[in-house]
Image (cartoon, rainbow, N blue to C red; front, side, top):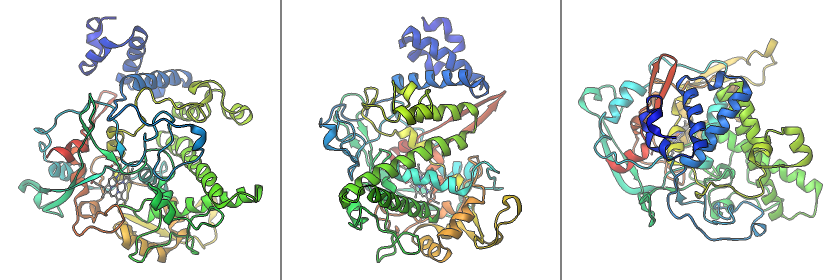
Length: 504
Ligand code: HEM
């Protein structure tokens, strides 16, 4: 099908790609593009919505996965690694390194040279004029603070750009300097690494394991994993008060402790306890299992529970449409549904049986990774409110699920990092969790970026604090999210933070 005929109805950005597509893909593209332009897909009856989502997924898998680095890696026999390794190696039998610690972030789009445009508009101006919180907006009854901490807990499982040793300074321009808590600050650039490959020439390493392997509680390498184990019945270390233990310097003992806060800390504690409970259940079932076997099985189970919560609870609540609910459940159980999968196991391919439990990995010809674009859109810092309303979990429950009595407001800025760990030990697991569950989180909108993030102390990979603060909103200033409502259309333009890190 010639692109020329359809030019008037296809956005110019897609003309080239459209002309390269097969006839069937062109038809699929036209369907998806039309529904997108009219913002209709989620309003269609669920079966049509599912056809839309499947077509879109197929097109994205074919045309939007770009390899960064080598396609081929070490091959191995899957039966030799029936468990998750510390550094995420040995998950794809055709490529042992794929998705492991310090492997490349992939891409959904080819990199574009941004050197000229990155400081225009100035990121500090963007932060001050478009991001900085004015009147706080929350998500009403849809999403609470536990849900906000959950996605950060996931980010700490999935991705973190490896930094260079070189620092870059940003100075607030005169026109906004008076509104900026920091008139200038320094941050570390993302490390640019040659791919030694045709195609994309340089890329960035992910210092977390890209797999959904629970690394936020188990760590991203073998050394860290060892440090967290008790070596008794497969269990992980946890404090008697139900909170994480700490090293002598105050850093929490958990898989990933960088740039965190009390909200993530309680989720790490919760899933550490879940791991230990799974160990107990497995041991009861088979008392002969060794410490190593219990640890490995419990890690597989706990990581799967985390992935399941994210897929069919968290995402469904975030996107809150019947079609997405059906779509996410189809991802997990397949169109055949839960009862067939629970009874007979995985049947058929990804559509009938779901993505979970496929016999072989299907990476669509590109080594598994998370992408730069994926990381950029997950910088959801506006989810964090300015204060946490502490509640009294010991009070008797009120009528019709009313929240427990309010005690006091705590500035969430005081719940970050090492200071936050100290404060959390005074608040306790139950009060912190119950309070987060009863308060809405921040809305992902413009002018809703927490003020304390404009003067925040970042941490090193080992969780220790850096000497100087940064303006996180300014770092996000290049992820310029411009929302234009035009008739019923909503367009989101995303400029990528990694271009910024590497180019100014
Ligand atoms: C209150 C707690 C939080 C703190 C203290 C915090 C702090 C930070 C810091 C210092 C960075 C590095 C910035 C840079 O170098 O560009 C960062 C990056 C990031 N944060 Fe947060 N953040 C918090 C909450 C969240 C939440 C709720 C999300 C939601 C998903 C999130 C997602 C991300 C992502 C995706 C990145 C980029 C990682 C990368 O470049 O690889 N953060 N955060």
